[in-house]
Length: 158
Image (cartoon, rainbow, N blue to C red; front, top):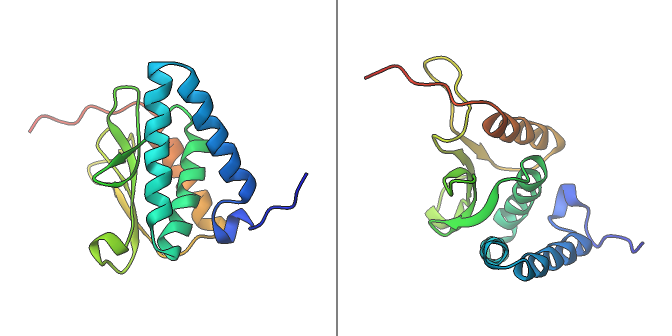
């Protein structure tokens, strides 16, 4: 097995990960319309990530790997020109917003209301990310797992 050209934890996708994603995209296209739609969404996300500045790209690549590994049922798609991951109903559950796009100090990992992160009457749904580490990966993994594996709680009437 060839040695990766970059370690996933510090430089983004390895050459092998990129090749595997391209292969999977081709596989999805051959599965028919639903597969083609998934493949097109995945390609659009990977293209958007490739266009980002090096720092944003590194974070987006790690978020992408973490989300797709933790919640393989989510479908990659772009949302407002940013990488996003939608449920079976097509509703975006989690998204990544790069710092460069809005000239922000930090990139953001966000969750929409279809994410089951409910925790009492108030909970965070957006997280600043300035760097990637094993601790950040663990937190993102837990957030994505919670967002996709729990049932949404009904909110009290307004």
